[in-house]
Each structure stands twice: as structure tokens, then as C-alpha cells.
Length: 361
Image 1 (cartoon, helix red, strand yellow):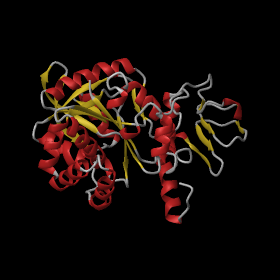
Image 2 (cartoon, helix red, strand yellow; image 1 turned 60 degrees about the vertical axis):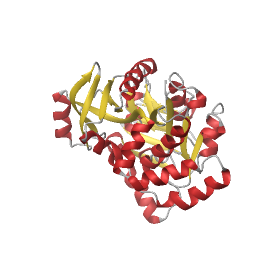
Image 3 (cartoon, one colour; image 1 turned 180 degrees about the vertical axis):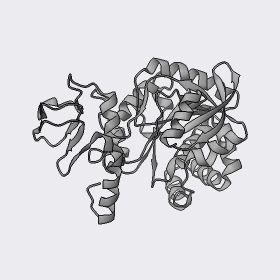
């Protein structure tokens, strides 16, 4: 159906100290099964993209781990970024490489660290998105909101184009609680999940129109890709100077203003695993509402404890008595304890560690 591109980057700072720069969240089994987030993503996309047509874009520090976790993925399908340049460079390079083989190929871009509970329904929605992409539209999957979420961006929908395909009038930044409630109650907004489907020639045309220097740099790198020495020279000479910008800002917002972006509604149990509070909401809990993350549940002793999220990673016993709605993450070199309602603030600890020059991030 399409060429799947999986973006495997970022460090997941709100999931510290479990997620680290050297082993970010997509490499961890946070799905309620033995699969890591990356493996689960590749598995569900196998229904729409054969492994030979699936690309993973990742950094140099994680390329070996990606290869180990996805042993069936051809080595040449792992695109290694020399340094992070945000999502547009990653997606644009993948699009340029696909276009060299098939200029009108359909490409889908997906994060490696999201949860999807209903894979079959995702497949149906992607088929709808592909139909829109074949018409020359830049398609994005809009998640039907279940509550006024302030941690996600939103898509404001315009008129219906055909069947389930609706035009996207505008991309909206993460709102306040009051604005999020207005969005959800109106019925005309979806969560922006960062899932995109388009013809690569259409996307690259928009990239060239809006960010010509970035387009020229990425296509020059792609042109050198099949020669090892030439590829390394191009990456060394061009990549560090590429504009660091997200695909939303670089392409999608401007394309939406020109009427070129559309969406289909997704209701397949999507979750962005952004923090421990979210993990506690989506993973199976015991009768007291406690969630123990990981496969080894023998490292935890809970007495008169409820509504808590526990991540045992050190091999030590984690014993909790009389606790309510807390997060405890125990790793070999760091322990996190905080209330569940402060889960979004864990990033502040990582920022402070960076300021101190601490390497435990």
C-alpha cells in the first residue's frame, strides 16, 4: 500500500530515568507485551508496507540497537542521521530516497514511540489516507479526541472533500485547557498525531516551494546515497547546515493555508506515550489500579498502595506502603519519585541535570 518511514529519534525526557539519550523510549517494552515500542510500530505497519519498503530514520547512537530489534529489516533500510535536524530533514531525506526509485510512490511517516490498540482499524484508515494521497493531497491522520488534551496539537477541519476525506484548514498549537475544551466540544478538531501519507513528488514539491535550501540539500544527499564515499562526503558537507525545523512548520502549515492538506479521522486507540501518567492510563492495572511496567513483576511489593505507576529496572526490591497515585522509577543509577499529576514536569529534572553537566540523562 505504501512505503512506511519510521522516525526513531528523540530521548523521551518525560520518561526519565527509564528513557535516556543512549536508550530512548522507543527501544523499551512499554506496550504491555515483550515488544518494544519500535517493534510494535514495525509490526503493525507490516500490514501496509513490506519490510523491503520500510525505512527507519535514526541517529548514529541508536542504529545498532534498531538493527538488533528489527532483524528482518534490510541494513540498507536504516537511514542514519549524523546529528538531529528535526523531523523535516529526516522525513525529507526519506522522501528523496524513495523518489529516486519511484517518483510517485506513496509514503507514510510514523513515529516509533506511539501506542495503537486496534491495528486492523489503523490499516483501514491508512487505506483512506492513501486514496487521498493518490489525488495529490498531503494527508495527515486526525485522531478523534476523547478529552480536552493540552499536550497535543490540533487540526482544524474544513469542508469535506470526498467520503471520509476532510480538508485541514489550520494546524493549531498545544492549547490551554479552556481552549482544548472548546476544540473538543465543537466537533471540528482532531488531535495531530504526526502521521502523514502523501505522494513523494507532491511532498517534495511543497518542500521545494517553501524551503528551497532544505530541499536542495536533501536531494543532493539523496543523489549521492548509493556511493558510500560520496554519501559520507555529502552528509559531512551538507547535513550540519540543513535548517533544523519540524515538518509541520516547514511544509504542512503552509500547505494547509494553500488548501493542499487533508485528513481522515482515526479512532484506533492511539496514544502518544509521553510520560508515566500516560503509561498508567493505558497499560493493564491490578485490582488497586497500580501499573507495574516491564515483564518482571517479581521486583515489586505493594501494600495498601493504589493508583501508582512502578518501573522496576535495577533488580532491587521496590516496596511501597500506604502510597496513593505516585510514580516510582528505580534504575541502577537513578531513582525517580513523584506524584502522578506531576508527570509532565519530569522534563524539568532532565533540564536541571543538563545545566549541572550531569551525564545521567
